[in-house]
Length: 437
Image (cartoon, rainbow, N blue to C red):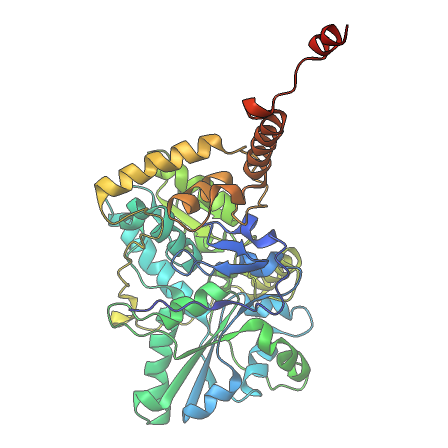
């Protein structure tokens, strides 16, 4: 099955500046012939390249409000971080109401699904006796990172569906009941803070359904802002715990209990996953991991500064308080996906050949300068060595190696220029003088 990616590259905007290759956590970007390109099988759609590209050549492709016309009844699924973009301009209820003014018929808060997942996660942790720590699957960029770089940790992902998918399934059920329409006539649209969740929603694993569409938060920010003051309030059903999932530490707090750790920022996530793979942190029960700085409020498709958004979301949740009503019955909506490894980093399907290529990579890497300058178009000397062994680059694409090769050739040319055939050799000057006398 072809893997969908929401992150796309606009070559007409790309200047080949190499900023993106340094920031990609899976080394999925190269620069060739003055333009960047994405190695699709390595990309996890984390959006780091979108953040750092000064030319806006990286974009995320999602759905638009025009897609609502494909359904007779549409339900918006705003992420918990959604409201952080508009506080304190309007209340939570007004912010939700602004989505109705965009053409939606109803709203199902993903924050409500987050509370359902938190409750189920707490039950699971209380009865779990397996290998620790368990890792939250809520951030699809983290899941993708594990699939590509840390496949041995896939078994430690919490086997529960994410709040986004739980919300989509429950919203579909409620929409069918409210409208009397068949499921295929009811559309569910997630309002996404990041490209990774667009990708996750588009993938269909185990035949389990997620949202019918995903609309990037950035794309509707202006429309929501325009309708904010005039929108009729829409009642909120979620509590502070569910909305806390929108920033780092919120998931941990909502689940509750000891020995829980939150980690945010892709580099910190990589560091902690490396520790787990090495056998550390077994005293931790559960890891909340989010690739974006500050959590979903720092998503690549958000508008507000992540630190400001996190502060506003915390202030908002402090005013919401817990919801007194009972949570909806989850039923089978918590059924998880099966996450399979994505062997994007292997050098060859055949083990013996892969080992031989690994030795070649080591040898090539040793002859490189180790500067990780990026001038070759690869993010590091090690990555460049792999490209050479794969046949995707030549060693002289490294400017240092090329310069040394040119120096050696130049010295050989100079040495050759000094030499003449024996038949053309000149007599020594001293001998000429003696003969003249």
